[in-house]
Every structure is written in C-alpha cells, then in structure tokens.
Length: 388
Image 1 (cartoon, one colour):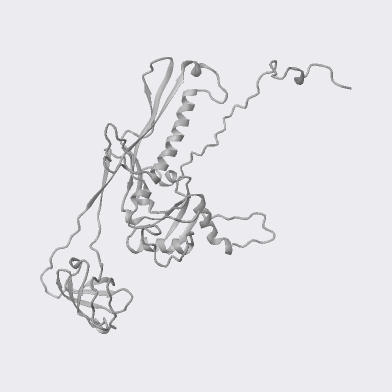
Image 2: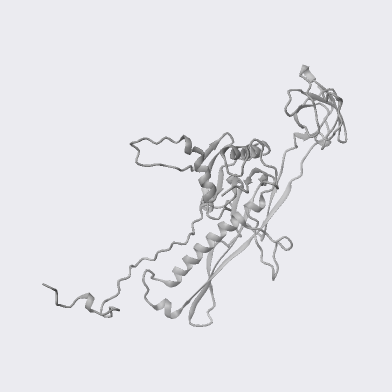
C-alpha cells in the first residue's frame, strides 16, 4: 500500500519545513604544505637587521692550471711553466699534473712563471698541455731553514635581505557575532587561513626568490625581497648551453642517475660540503623513482607495488629527497642543509597584529619578516633544463 502521510518529499522543492543538514567540517583542498621548511627546521638565531650578513672563508688553494700554449715537441721535458695564479705556489712544492703519475718539484717562482724539476723521485714524465690542472701535493721545507713568507686568506662578507610577508584580516562585527558552520570564531579561522598562505609563499620565496638589483635594501617605492636558493647558486649551476655540465654525466636532457652522481661528484671535488638534501618537483621526482624501476622485484604473491625513492645514497652523500610543489619543474636542487637557515628578523616571526578599526569590524594583519641565510654557495648545486 502506498504511503499517504506527511513525508520529506511533500515539503516542497526548497524544503522550507526541514532544518538544514550541513556537516560541521570545512574541507580545504588548496596546497599549503611546506616540506622544505619542515626539513630545515627552526634557525639557530634570528636576523638582527634587514640586511643580514655572514662571513665565509676558504683555505689557501692547492690547485691551479697551466696557462701556456707552446711546449717542447714532447711536452714532457719543459722545466719552465706559466700558470694562472703563481702566488699559489712556493719553492719546495711537490706538484702532480692531472691525468699523470709524474711528480714535479718547484725550484723557483717568479710571478706566474714556475721553474720545476721534472720526473722528480723517479716518476714518469707526463706530457703537459695548456689548461692542464696542477695539484699541489704538499710543501717540503728545508731542515733548519728560516720561516717562509706568511700566507693567509681574507674572509668574505655575504648578505641577503629580509622580506616582509603580510596579509590583512577584516571581519565585520555581525559576521563575528553570527553562528557559522564549522567555525567557532571567524577571526581565528581567517588568521589560520592567511598564515597557511604566507607559509606557502615563504617556502616559494626561499626556493625561487630574487632581490632587486639596484635597490636591494628597499625604498619607499621599492619592495625589499630576498634571494632564494636558485638565485644564490652560481659555482655549481649546471645549465645546458649556459654553464658547464658535470663531466661523466652522460648525454640527453633527462635526469639520470649517471648525471645526478656526476653533479654530486663535482660539488664534492671542490668543496667540503655534504649534500644531504635533493629538492625536486613532481616531474623530476618521478625521474628519480625510475632509477630503480628496472631492478625492482615483483613477485606473484605481492599485493603492493612500491615505486618510491625517499632517500638516495651515493658515494658523495646520503640525500633525503624532498618533493616540493614550488621547485621549478626542470630543476633539481642539491643542498647541504647544515649551511641553510630561514631566519626571522628578531621579533618579527609570523604573528597577528591588531589594527585600529575605522568601523564595525575586527581588523588586523598576519605579518612576518624573514630572510634566507645560504652559506658557502659552492657547497650546493643545481641541475636545470631537465626534461619534464
């Protein structure tokens, strides 16, 4: 028998007689995670000026290159050599040319011209050519000799600039007093939303930010911005057609394990940095996962197939692979996280600052000021121009 009593379907198309059924949960799908900031953690200290500076130093170099185009016919008997930087050498240095087993003894230094004893200690003479790399093995001092001339390096001051991150919150008195689904306090909810946005933007700027070339400290009309990691890396920026690619990295424009290892080796060879973090976007993360795809076993009884590399271990470091939405799609960042800090200006970490209201509203700013301390840029590297 058909039902003839009062039912929900007889309450009208707009259901004016029924109470609304709205879930007391608000769903947010916009991405706001900050995996790189989470990985780096809190800084050891805050910045104390809008121009944040730090000191860097180096040891006296122990390598140089030959700078001459004319040699004897064999190139294995020349005792006079011209180099790029003669001040790096001292009488008594034992020198080895790259690619050979010969050891040479430096017997004289005049400007950029060296006088050397070839095939020292019975080693086999090596054919020298222009741009051959010379490595100083060490210096042999004479017994009882006077002290040599003092050598030193100058510390270098590096800098970055603080950037102000700000977002305004304004809620009318009526909205604040009204009952809303999923929200007990509208002002607090808006604070949380704006904070998520600013943290998202901070990570993006840490990776991709750039300071103004002409007025980096800012003016009344020029906004002060920080240099990010991509902008800060120069020595080991491996970019096809722009910077030298790492030797032994293979060919092609796709990221490969061979290329990644070659880049890590280049960084290791000319710095004591310990690359422990690889930051990539989705496309390059898939390339890294594919490193082991061909060798990953899958048995008939397996019900789960894993295609994920979260840690990459090579001869040149154990690296955690960080997937960040804000990394450029064609770029792989190779970082030493111990030399990176994202520091707030003292007393200016993210906070809510109430503002005077000019009407019936609650108004304020979520505001913070941060900079990137990126020490020893040659301890880091990047691969750019990778196929996506």
